[in-house]
Image: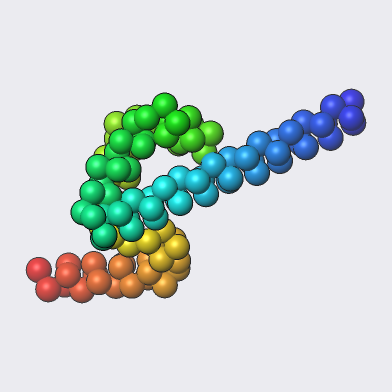
Length: 108
């Protein structure tokens, strides 16, 4: 019984590591699309095409993300904002954005 539990825990941890690896691929695809958007103006189209492709859907699924049209729209919106993933995921950016939204709400 102990061997089964250890094996299950090991397999779960391996699965979590694989999911994180695929999530990193999604973040890299977003960063590439943002760079393309700034340079060529076609980043939103690139990320949408990738997310709808067989490879993109497979990567999204392996990252634990349901590859549906709502997700594609969210990726496109994210690229449209032009904020790199490392910045968007940082705590400071999140706090800055919340403060700016609070100021806008007070001004309205």
